[in-house]
Amino acid sequence: MQKHFCDGQHLRSIFSMVVAAFAFLTLNAWSADKPFTVVSYNVKNYLIDPVGTRKIKSEESRKALVRNLVELNADVIAFQEMGGAKGLAELRSRLKDGGIDYPIAKVLYGHDKAIQLAMLSRIPVVRSVAHTNVSYLIGTQRLWVSRGFDETQFKSDSGYEFTLINVHLKSKRTVPHADCDVMRLHEARLLRNIIDQRLGKNPDLNLMIVGDLNDSPDSPSVKRVVTGGKPTLTDLKPLACNKENGNGADWTYYYAAKKSENRYDYFLVSPGMAKDLIREKTIVFSSEKFGLASDHRPIIATIAAKDR
Image: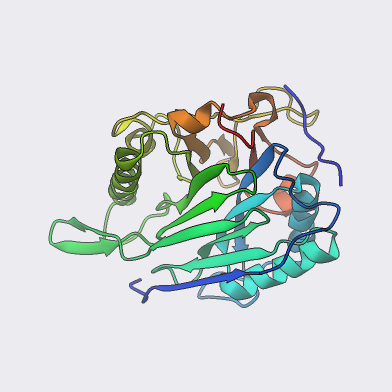
């Protein structure tokens, strides 16, 4: 399948991971000697059953999202707002019907009972760390990072290794018990601590932070993740390049209530991994009617499968 890109709670921790022990030999299989692609996609409540005020995702919306993912045909997909293992299994089945099979699937269950982080991959996974019991204090009140942080280490058949941390920071939606901006900043600080631990042990680590940070690049929380330790991470700043939005459109989230376009979704990488990026194929993807699938547009990064 050709890829159509432009060049230019406290809930107890449960971590489920399904890894198929077989070779992936279809035509769309990942090839170790070629560049690979990573997609980050907030899929807006991919729920099979309603949870609280969150409704199930409509059939029309699911079909639109699958169309996007089939066209992207990514090697690794990091999801935000997935409806648990049930939602991921349903989406995985739809993708298989569309011609794309992912042998590796996992869901991270944090304190949020409604939506979770999830991943599909055709690149082998060698290690996973579930950061689900990460907490902070606001005054005397202890709060947990709602969705946790999902850390996965991959290793290709060619020997290329990289670590991906999937995140979904506190939204701007107000809550009665704390200020949402303060909560998000605390979550960002805790994420940066993990980054510093990893890079402190191995400065050359190929590390990628992906997901929905729920704020703009100049916000205190995003700055804390990017520049809050050493080394500074590189913001890949993917741009859209399609006829619908024109070259240079970098927004990833559309807030319908205010008709505003915002960049909330990120690829942040360590200095070592920044060298391996294929810049012209690291973009914001948009289909003609992207809003049917989600209020976020997916972003895709293309990485050379070797250290450069």
